[in-house]
Image 1 (cartoon, one colour):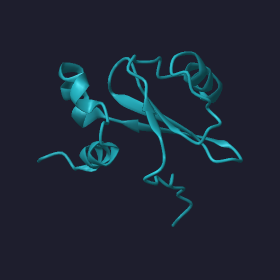
Image 2 (cartoon, rainbow, N blue to C red; image 1 turned 60 degrees about the vertical axis):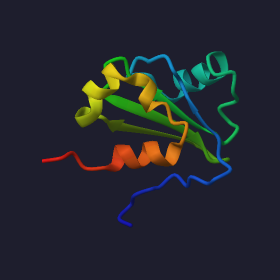
Image 3 (cartoon, helix red, strand yellow; image 1 turned 90 degrees about the horizontal axis):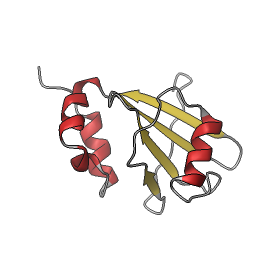
Image 4 (cartoon, rainbow, N blue to C red; image 1 turned 45 degrees about the vertical axis):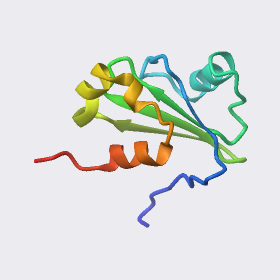
Length: 108
């Protein structure tokens, strides 16, 4: 796989999405603290935590795999304007649909 690491998403996994945007420079410790304070959740629980940057151009995903934290960042440049105009449509009530939307290539 060329050194790539994947986060295994299972049907039982809880995915928590922060509604308020965050400073995109926050690291693992700061995001774990937000999990406790804003989401009322234990960052060591195995849940996937998703945070949106203030600019709306990236998301940060925090996960704990019983050994270490993983922090992933992805740019949403092609979706940024839509995300700003319609943020409620991006709340992952169905996370598979939302992940599929993020993975769809932009129309040429």
